[in-house]
Length: 479
Image 1: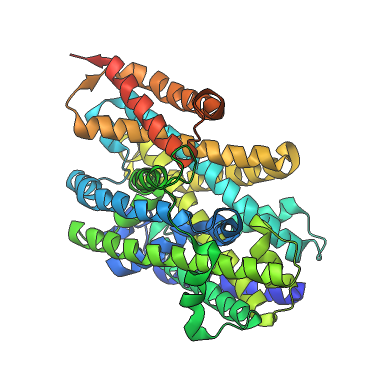
Image 2 (image 1 turned 45 degrees about the horizontal axis):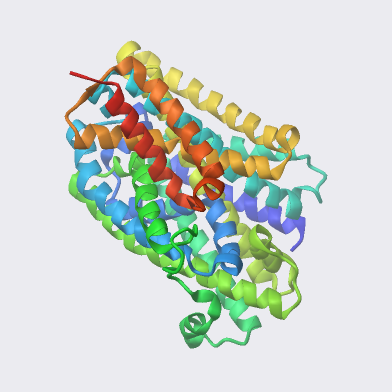
């Protein structure tokens, strides 16, 4: 696939996104930017959330996991089902009852201002690092297959990327994203389907035998009950999946902001129900694709593994123009379906939670301030992504930064669990100390767990992090 063709594809893709932005951006203010006027059809939100949940990391990484860990990731996905049930039956009713714009406002009502600002700050930190990492991963792939050939440096690639996101989100925010995410989810799923078709053809697998081929393969082992010390032990991954879903969807402003655009609680719960079913199926399909890619690479002597497996086979294996063009389309869709909502949720959280925009500023000034914040977060994302490339450089360090961003959800898990399941009050001013200490202690324990206990935490670290926060809150309780 030639660079010019890829460039035309990207240009056409963003032209469609800008058209959607124009159509949804008429007469839009902060109510549309933050809540989409609470007029979003639940089925549109549900479908669009799939793309935002998967992201560019999932699109590239999940197929590459099969070679080393088989289908063990499905144990985490099954845990998601339990987590999404908690979101639909516990958290969504709470958010709608309180009529929240930012979900972290709950912490102010329950504990006080310090807890509120702490929860919002941890989200902002995690989302900046997480979104930057996801875009960095995808920008590197685009740089290799397109922009290097055009002699465009990486920093220009990043600026153009963020600028395009800003252009179609700055006016209507979440109101636009609800619809653009739907389009991007569709492109991503079509890309996976096309890839499965081409690779199956390359392996001489007939369409009707796709599922039986996966089931019969040694790579499709899904459940691991043998070694409870292992990171892929079933109950460890299942419970981790449940808590990951609760914190990274239910306690995440990015994901919940979409749910809160539904017309009412009933529609939001419908959205969560169908989203859960479809997401479970889609993750299985991604793993099935990974199995086929692994077999194709082995059969054809292709030396590509993990994150390089899917891009290499899609663009360099000679399977055809179709798989290459849809891979690029799916990659772009996966990247921007998570990045655009991240930029909007960062703007929302900082405006509402940190600046108290709706309380401290005049109505006529609120839109201007929100637009400035949107620009500042766009610049911040550019700087963080570029720092990954030119300052940190060490890929293992960057990966650890992304993992550590996940640690920041532990304090949120502890705070919300303590708030929902106890009636105790805390010394509000001490909450930031507990929230900072918990992920640090969790990291120390996780880093040494193999030596100390002969035990690997894996995804389970989130539960430890939340538990330490919960215990810390007990220690600072007040009568």
